[in-house]
Image 1: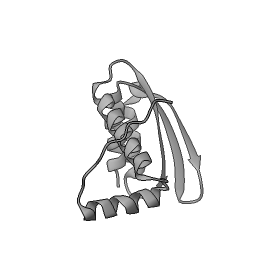
Image 2 (image 1 turned 60 degrees about the horizontal axis):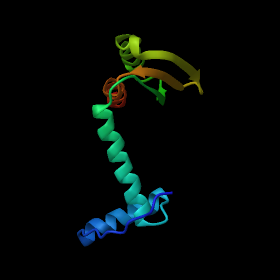
Image 3 (image 1 turned 180 degrees about the vertical axis):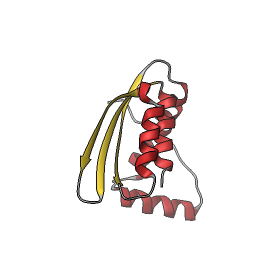
Length: 122
């Protein structure tokens, strides 16, 4: 494990209070651990924007198949990006809900766009 370096962070009292509530809710044991995770997340996000070469990912979601036009929107998204889709798996959880997994490959930025489009569906 790399040596840890201590440094100070200054922030407004109200912002720190909100941060403490968030890290307690997420189950962090201390602020340092939470800040390290936030920095890692931001670095990964930045690397996604500049990644070269092919990456792999999985989209996993549950949806209500009775939602008007939702299945059509999901199918259209998959057909639009068929060249990035390795495989899909569809499971009926109950009368109303379906569980899907889409395995993807391609440029990181494109996979991120597909995920964001999926998240934009109501």
